[in-house]
Length: 109
Image (tube, rainbow, N blue to C red):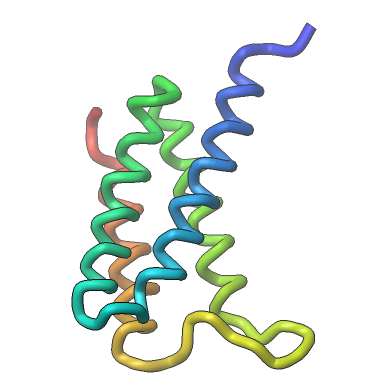
């Protein structure tokens, strides 16, 4: 029988990926409000993952999933499309998002 922690880890992984996707879609839209929404979503979402799934390790899993989505969106795809371009908002999203996710992971719940 599968352990409940496995389901929580998978849930945290999916939750972190969704938070990352929301940030990727908002960071360059509706400037400058979009970057604020993207960073706020990152900070609140990673922190909420720990509360939702019950442990700090699940915040770390959600943060890693967020980072994987953000890094994939910042690299060129098969047809040379890129979602996080190297402009002010893209750089703020990547650096600020990593900072906010790290703070959320190490913050006591």
